[in-house]
Each structure stands twice: as structure tokens, then as C-alpha cells.
Image 1 (cartoon, rainbow, N blue to C red):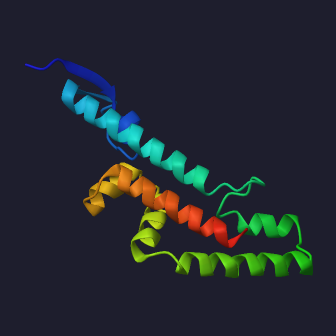
Image 2 (tube, rainbow, N blue to C red):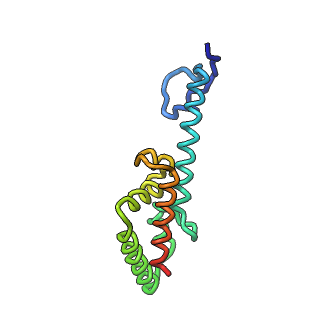
Image 3 (cartoon, rainbow, N blue to C red):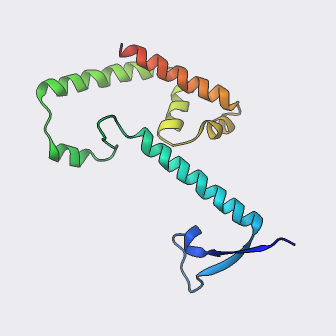
Length: 141
């Protein structure tokens, strides 16, 4: 029989309600819970890193950025031109490349998770994402 591990319910179930503060789980269940939380933390960290630009802007802080600074007309035109180039670059990718970039950058999935979803190898997904980024970068050179 498996040895029981005492866990604090709130550590694993943030929205838990009730009077019980602790429970006992098997070693296998504990490992599964810990692995799930490690993966979720990694995915969240990767999503945050992917949405952080060189100037420190994090996607979703638009309102605060607008209130803090106003952009010159020249900067707005340059920004618009860059967006148009980016749209053209993304449209030049294959449907598979666009999907994998979306899953990686916006859904926060790992190469392994994307590979499992598409039924291909991790390396295939990694190469596809890297090739996509290289192709997009060429549009900006």
C-alpha cells in the first residue's frame, strides 16, 4: 500500500471551500498534483516572457502606457508601418507555422504540448517555430 502524504488543501485548490484545511493523498496523487502545478507555473512564466517587450511593456497594459506618454506623429507612422510589415510577414507563413506560433506565443504551450496536439515530434515543432521566426525577421531587415 502506498504511503499517505499530508497536504494543505489551499496549496493545491485555491478556490477550495469548507472546514478541512488538510487532507491525505497517495504519493502518486501528490506527484501528479505537483507536476501539474509545475507545468502550469512554467506555462504562465513563458506566456509572461513572450509578452514582454524590450522596453518592459507587458501586453495588456495599454491603458496605462497611453496615460503615461503620448507618441509623436512620426512614431505613430513608424509603428503603423511596422505592424503592416508584421502582418505581411505572418501572412507569408504556412497555416501550420501560423498555428504553431499562435499556440507557442499566445496559448503558452510548450513544444512538447504542441507536438502531442499535432501528432509530430518536439523537434519538428521547434524547427517550425524557429523557421517561422527567421522568416519573419527577414521582413524587418
